[in-house]
Figure: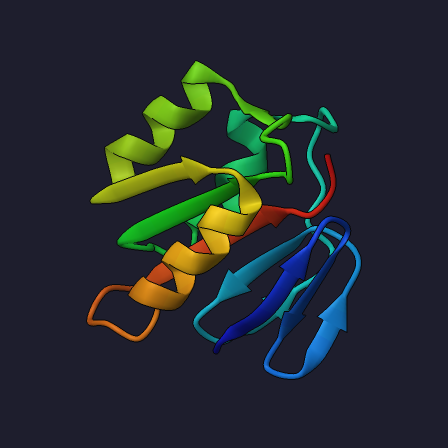
Length: 114
């Protein structure tokens, strides 16, 4: 899977455009990712991700980085994943494209706005 383009509020993955927050799994795209608190990732928000046993998790915090990640959520990710990255979404997209073709199981959860 390849992220072809990102701009605030819109991402194109493998030729298909999405306008809501997404999780990129090795198996495909889930465009229904929503959090308990809109602009913060809480531990509960990570259960679907952790259930897939990723080696690497990339969180896109929005165009300006306005989405925060609760410390409890980061701690939980670090317990189960070899690498955890929190970046503005544009940087998260570039990192995903760099790592997704490698040997690790990479999952990216991307907030598309703010």
